[in-house]
Image (cartoon, helix red, strand yellow):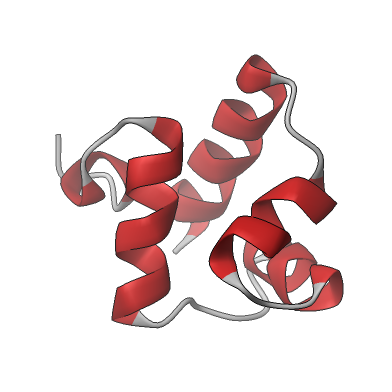
Length: 66
């Protein structure tokens, strides 16, 4: 999941979104989202889809399956 955490971090920075904003979009607490970026936790399938939609990329891209 190293590629996943790198991509969500880069996409978030590129869009100038805060971790708080992304967490709110997902309906989770900010520390939970931070664990995604640190690679300490993995999102549910539903949240993975929400992340892809928020950043306007495919789930395959987020998972490194371009």
